[in-house]
Amino acid sequence: MRRNSVKTRILMFFLIYGVIMGCVSIIIWPADPVFIFLLNGPGLWLGDTVYTTAINYLSHSGLTIPWVFRIPQIYFMTSVLFWGLVGGFICLVNPEKIFRFIDLYPDFATFTIILIFSILQLIIGNNIKAIILSVSLMLPNLIVILPTNVVIKRIFKSKRPEQYYKSVKGRTIFEGSFPSFHSHFSAGEATTYIVGIALYSSNLRLTATLLAIITVGLASIIIAYSRVALKMHHPVDVLGGFILGVATGFVVSYTMGRLIWDQIPLAYHVVMIFVFVTFVFLLSRKQRKMKV
Image (cartoon, rainbow, N blue to C red; front, side, top):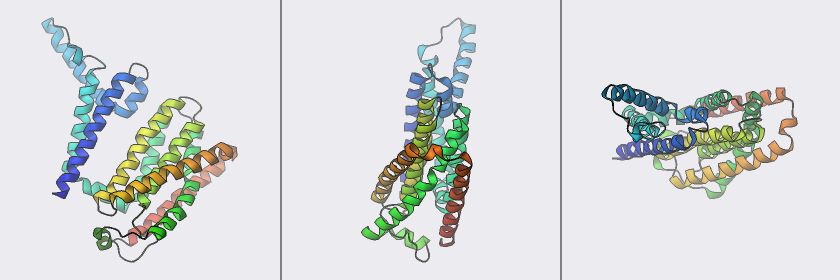
């Protein structure tokens, strides 16, 4: 019953995403087709295919193509159809396997998300310096998140769901339930990335920021939801961690980004990214050793 409930939520999530992308495609496509293609490329491609097929078929019959099959209206239907099929496929694959991968390899999930979304920023024409400054901001944010999360956990001393104690051996500084560290970390670093892109993008600032919000924000929500789906946390733990992450990420990134961050030589930013990657890898490796 629980597995069916998780699958239903995942399917609904992708259907809602398809509806949103369909509406956004209709509104934004005429003004910025490149940006909307990055968010909804498959939906647009399917829409173009349906439109071309309809034109070829109806032209031989001397008929006019219906309004609903014209561009950009067709993008709504094809977006809902495509993303609904993606959600259905993930449900067939078993979403718990994806969630368990995120739980076991949060470092690789984090690095993959950063790499993919940074490449998307380059595709839309953002400068590489803005991306480097945004990613390097994640290190001071992590330095703030770690002790903050541990201290709050010690204050509340809340118990985790029973499933957690069955899947983890030994004790850890992240053993407390509230707030979720995964949720705190993912939301914090996502916010940091978004604020960095907003501050340092020299051109296409609005487009780059919107892309960061939709893509990185979506990824952080999926990571947070996986903690509840795997019964590693209660919903309130994830919600609290997410809110704290957004607050921490905004304060740290906006304060440092405004004051000193762009004055530091670029080479030091590259070193900070290396330190961040190494630290997250070692932290995740230690957590993996404690899994049953």
